[in-house]
Amino acid sequence: MGTEDSRVEGSTPLSTRALSTMRSPHLWAIAALTILLGLIYYADQFIPFDWRFFTSEYIHDVHRALFLVPMLYAAVVFRTKGAFVMSALSLCVLLPRALLVSPHEDPVLRAIVFIAVASLATVLLAVGQERMQREREALRQLDLARHDLLDSAELLRVSEARYRGLFNSASDAIMVHDLDGNIIEVNESASILTGYSASELTTMSLSQLLTAKSLDVATTGYKALLTDTAAAGRVELELLRKDGVTRIVESAANLISGDSQPVAVQAIARDVTELRRQREGLERYLSEVTKAQEEERKRIARELHDETAQDLATLLLDIEAVTRATDGPPEQTLRRLENLRSRAKAIMQGVRRMSHELRPDVLDHLGLLPALEWLADDIGVSHGIQASIEVLGTPRRLPPDVELLLFRIAQEALSNVRKHSEATNVEVRVEFGPQHVGLAVTDNGKGFALPQTLNDFATAGKLGILGMHERARALGGELFVQSEARQGTTVSVRVAW
Image (cartoon, rainbow, N blue to C red; front, top):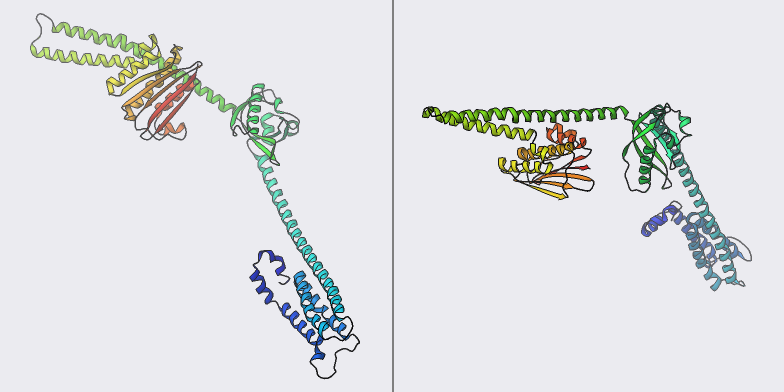
């Protein structure tokens, strides 16, 4: 193995390393030098005349000393392995003469001492070379690591500058505080939102910026994040500005970790005071529209029942009187009067049904459950859809406005079943809990694909569902719609009461 190969020895197959060593010119140079020195060492055994390269009493000591050259050469090039191999090879070359030929005293001891000393020097040189190689490699790796560190530091600096720019230019207020609520860092938007300067905010805590109720909400959310019991979500908080004005902010928080441990919280807040006021105004408007609609329904139902139906009843009595008169009309006129009476009866029944749908008397007089039973009977008789009522819990009367809105939700749900579902069966379930009332309408119809958001119901033309949703919100509850193709639909609402 050459010097270059020693760096990759551990990862190169043995056959590849052997082939590389055989191709090394250093190997053949050492081999040639060793052969040459061997010939010199044994020259007097082959040359017939008494000719020597050196003249000395211990001439072969000089010849043996020449073997230091290939041994040191092998140590420099092939490191410890080369040193050991060359030492063994030199011993094999020198020892036969000491044993068989040399006429001098202690030739074997001389040869062994020489090999021992030469091998020690060779091995020490090889070890030194390997240590120097490792040090050079370590220095090279250290230099690479230094450059990588410098590159990483530059990337970190650029990233920090970019983050700092985004942090300061963000339109939302951003605050970083420790786990005790002490503010550490803020951006310019936070100063604008609160009215405090950045230096003032970094000496304050959340308890000085939030109302007591909002502080409890925020603290509960942070504890949930710390215990991994909740994901980051948005909450509405009341923020106290420096000028004493209270603003409504929508806030979301995320943990900042260091060494795999949470060390701070980053909160992002957006002022939604005007949006909240607009939403509350819209809700009040919708509530008033709903009330006005119900009053108008009630008025129209009363007029239909008290005036139009009565007028039709009087008309029927007049037709009946003409029909039964002693000098009654001829037969042809009588048939016309009968047809007119049948049509008047049908119109009066339609008027009464419309009056009940607009404002059923049974709801005002008997309550929600009888009104729902009337709806179930009507959809069964008029449209052939089998309907049933299931009551869970102990029934009780609710405030009139609550019963009215729940009735309207059930009425709209049953109307959708009749118009769109192609269902043959529908179930209305009413649950009276200790502190809540639940209503659910489930059909076995064709179902439909649910939109992603509530606004998509309007885009899809499902305005009835929007109306049910607004009525549920007016009750302080929430509407849920579950549907799947060919699996039917369930519309449910749950109201705390």
